[in-house]
Image (cartoon, rainbow, N blue to C red):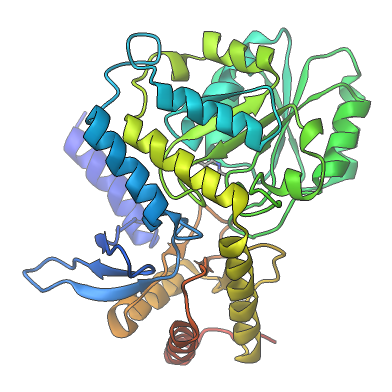
Length: 405
Ligand code: PMP
């Protein structure tokens, strides 16, 4: 085996397809969100750019309340938590955060994990492997963290056509009421920006005696009067068995969790290896997340401003004849339809116009639907939107990319 050739060839294949990932080396600037320094290397001075694709959707990662809470814990408790939750790493801030998360979702209990990825992976792999003869019914567009968790569980998996209630019902009816079943889905699908009909999916889960597992990663903090997600907005939160979320997007910090009935949460706490065998978050991280959740529970200002900005951007793109995809959420995807073109458009926006938007290519989205995905926040002002639209029109005409019909 020639190991070097193997690795070089595999990477070369990605490069030839235009799918090799190059990360923008950013330095965020407190007080200037969504502006950041871009470090280009080669001994050049960093350049100030505007970030248009951050998942810190509301800018909470720089909110003074969040920063103060983090700094207070660093001063008071120091760096790390000192261990796994089981061995010396359970901190009173973790406990307070779990209580806050349970209350946010109207559930009996919550469990904090390393990230949203780990929360999905651990929960689905644990439930899928431990529930006897379990089948997991998974929406076709589910995130990789759910897919890998289900695979690892070795439970039977049925894929249901994206957001297709008839197909979901067929599968559930086929399996019958006695088999253990988990229906796993998301609320906001982050690449198309579409939203699941949660209430109708829950009707089917109840009719066929299936556990419902809802990933609200792109919705917590963003929807519902207290930021409890789309299930809160739709008034169906109490009917979801397991809600999963992240602290790294609208809440602006890092971490993931599940919330649900205390026996289910205790089960994952007791049997979930991805929870048990890893060190817990530094107290400062948990304190930042706690401050962010508490703020967004009370304040609608950021959510409302974000909604207005997303609608304004969508309308400006439509008016300019740019092929913006219709989406009922905070996400604004702009279709390009070709991997190499998508990368080139992103590069030109960055290097010629100081606009950073990462190309979204296969396998994140199907081939032929490559796109730029904009996530406008409350602080993308009119001037930044004007500059973005003018720059997009320039790049679109330089590259001859299809405009809207
Ligand atoms: N679920 C979905 C739908 C996601 O898009 C992501 C990450 N982008 C995750 C889970 C993982 O969350 P985290 O980034 O907190 O690991």
